[in-house]
Image: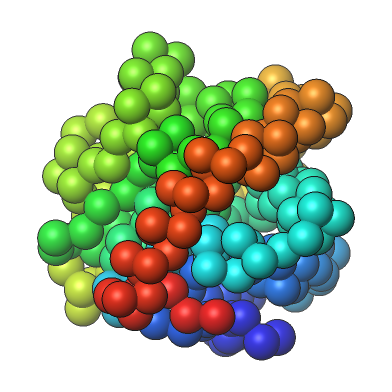
Length: 258
């Protein structure tokens, strides 16, 4: 895999995102992550998975620098696959814990909220969904996923203004479940996933799928109409102009790497 590393400790697999400084999500990462999760789901030797990033960044979200240069066919396929990845992660039959190692806006936050539990590192970091200010129409599936943890009222308010939360705010809102010092982050995530693994796997899995049945149904639903609107807005001149400004800012700060 080119976009992440995997390590195995007994029945626990850790997926560590590893793409540039900020783990910006491109099409390659989406496809590799989806394939990896599907493989782990059918591996009887795997009891649970931790998804993490690197120091300072879990993931900065969609790689706008690369995504901006996708042609129309590439853009459509990217978003089709990214929305499908949400379902692959959310419907994963085994325990999946996010060890959020730093900033986690937009797509990074989406990866995290697909998991069963989130531990976020303490520090001056942010997490949340800021698609609206970026110029990306929020699909219903993302709202359903956000509202699953925050409740509809809070999810609506946060999405419509593109709110990014500090670590303590995310904990208070219920967006993350626990915080930990940098040197305790992985041990906290391991403790949680191992507690899940120790439970009866059939009971745990079937309960998870029952509790997420409505959510998974929404994530699996046909989103063609929404996707068409998203892509139309993505290619709108005002959106492209705004993206160009953001990309120049990203390049100057060197926070997204192709």
